[in-house]
Amino acid sequence: VDQCKLTGNWTNDLGSNMTIGNLSSKGEFTGTYHTAVTSTTQQIKLSPLTGIQHNNTQPIFGFTVNWTFTDSSAVFTGQCFVDKDGKEVLKTMWLLRSDAKSIKDDWNATSVGTNVFTRL
Ligand SMILES: CC(=O)N1C(=O)N[C@@H]2[C@H](CCCCC(=O)O)SC[C@@H]21
Image (cartoon, rainbow, N blue to C red; front, side, top):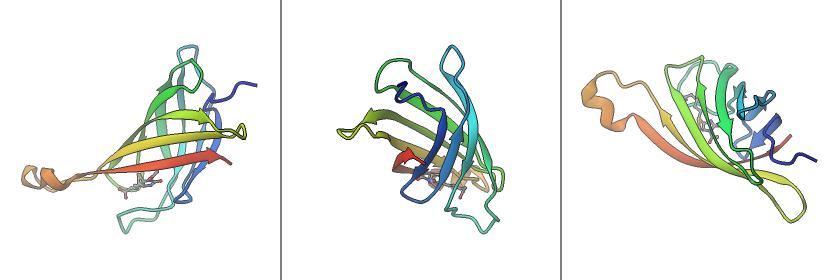
């Protein structure tokens, strides 16, 4: 079976879910991301994502989420692994860029985190 093709539904340890569509011949994909958490007071809404993955086993990928309910973006990069039980795991790190009111606040506008996704 085509393990670590990212098409399908994933969930992470925060309880956020993402759905990834079919891959192009170049490994490009689009999808939607439903975050379980936000640093804003906005109502959480489904947000679009777009990314690309390599075509080897245990592929490396990256994708960007443009949050529709706040002026921020997150870029995720990581690798898909198949664990000893044959389960696919996405080990990722992300940079979240929030909206800085002015350039003097730019220093404090990017946060970083790690995250693990498994198939829903
Ligand atoms: C995967 C993971 O760790 N995260 C997740 O699932 N949601 C949070 C952030 C959601 C930001 C929402 C918009 C905002 O508050 O600016 S992006 C990385 C983090």
